[in-house]
Image 1 (cartoon, rainbow over the protein chains, first blue to last red):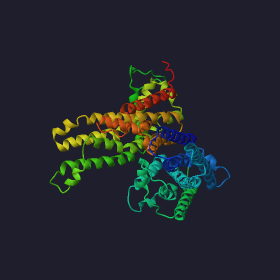
Image 2 (image 1 turned 180 degrees about the vertical axis):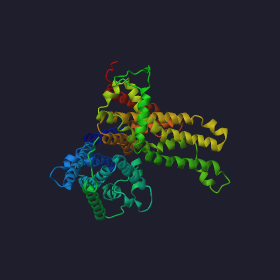
Image 3 (image 1 turned 60 degrees about the vertical axis):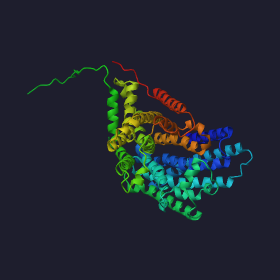
Length: 245
Length: 282
């Protein structure tokens, strides 16, 4: 997972350095950071890392046939799942934040004229959005991992299929996606209007801020609570047996 | 009442020089993959095909006399139409490759089945071709075969020899692009399957490897000369050349081909290193 984070950060930095050296279109360090944090971190790394960790919370124990032994411990079932979820959350959060901070630091160092603190408030906000997104996606994928045989497929279909498809449908159907509320909280949309291909896609995804910040946060927290509750109750709802063969 | 000797009975069959074990491995792989969620994905992948078939029907049947003439005029059934269809199938192709390919080698390594494979008259190439056959089978079903069917449908519906004489190269382009896509993406999937012990991590990393460079290429769209770093961009560039269309990116077509060839060669080298056949003792 760390390799995944480092790969994306390393590649984005290589691109940025080459872009600066070759004198491409006018894309400043701050604009590049916003676009990278939005496209790469929010739309790709967040769901991918969540899927990788989340689907494994219960599914890994089932596949390795260790869940039965885990449940023999003198601990309530919900506590075991909660601990595993928290561990996953911290791991995924650290990977995302370290990768984001590394990208931001190197980009602000390369920009030269701008100090590290220039975009610090937006950086903090982006970190908050990612952590909030993780709070929803991780238990969501955990539930998928507990109930489905192909949780990664379902997760990819949901995040890269449904959530992207809905962006092209007019009306309020976007309210049925998680990423919509994350978009509302993301500082990017009120700051950057580039001419790149990404800017074109961003304009399709989001037109204006639909909901106020407290409402978006409340909905995300509610979704997180719902999915976490479902995940914690999985072991009570479903019986896992050790296969004899 | 017959009395059987309860001792070892020697096999009296004939050993084949070339037993085509790759075919057996491939056939079994296809059968096993079918038991996964492939059917659902194939149904999903059929939706764009039906939509495109509808477009072909509209453009050929509505003509100038119909009230849908304006709509039909907007649909150009040229080489770009088939290229566009194959391009649109990419996301589902990735999902199909994940479902079929993530566990192909990973499961054999996980359950330590490789020594069992190679204790039989199975070589590295037999094993690899057999596994690759699974990817080609399901990948081809949603890309190459429907594109060819659409082309045949267009020929049959228009009924004019002029169309075929103008676009006779399209089936070859479809085959070429399909082969380039499946060899490259299939190779990457097999490498990740061979490197990772779990199917989930192989699937996620595969998705990341394809999409992260493409996303960065989009962000830094000012430096399209470096677009060859994205596998997807390379495939599209190569496809545009094969279909005789305007190239979508400014980097040379040979660079796209070279880039895909390097990726494939690297995949082969890694697979050669990871899949080590033991010596067969006869």
